[in-house]
Image (tube, rainbow, N blue to C red; front, top):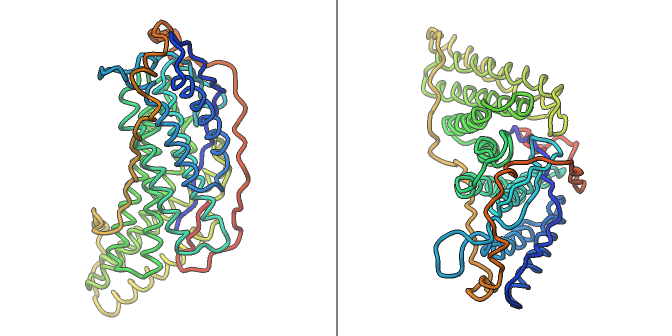
Length: 417
């Protein structure tokens, strides 16, 4: 199946020491700052390496969120936001905007960017697992889980964090709802790709595979549409990837629709569905050749050379020949001008994001430790800092991972890169 992935770079940030002034010496408040510094530092050290386990990343990420609670909400019995929410300036690069960091005086901005990096890590972790020469069923399930966790991270940012930000910054930043929403739709679609490939390998009902393929194509189109109003020079490469995947899965949807029509003795519709499949394959092929020449944050790839792409055309041709032959010998039905309607909703196998929830606050947070922080330093957010970009940060250097050059020995040609 079409498990070749578009992967943007990790986000870069600056060191944060959390050296906050205090009105009273409080060992728990001091420990919060020290633990938060070390936890953030450790998380940023681990993220560039997709070979780590998800459990390792999740453990440190949850510890960080637990320690961050007092910078997001009050611990003095009031339900309002923390008095320290706007006490620290955080600088982050954004996946589509190059190496310039954008600064915000908002701890929620920090949490949103950390969580985006967690989502990107899970995308790359899935790619790492599937890049092996021969993956097991358990590893395929881990790929599926990793993509659902990535989707969950982006869902958390999109639905829980971004709406409460004071500023969304510049268009195209990762805190732009269109960008985070596109990541969410893409990862959900890529999790579903695993389901489609599995359904093909197990030779499930053609109607089911067609519906799953159609749902997957729609998710890629949703991601593509979310990026429509952003600068084409910034999102062009990413949008083209979405369009390739949408066309590719629509081709699968119509091919399996043709097979299903044939079982229902609708020979004319079967032929027309396979013709439509070939049309979408041609569209995907054209887009793939354009993609391989485009500049952007993702690595250059030539999807039309991958096995899943090479295997699709012969599959379509065999299906079309079979439908034409049986319609000519058995059904003698007219081939309609319009293709048949695709199944609009699969009844099985739809992927859902795995939700991210804010963990319980660290036991170090209590009214006394919260009160120890100096309220004078918790001044209102500086409006002049809104989305300010300055200087450049070095690109995050990723650890190398193995990517197989061996064609998979299965019917779908499924592998992930």
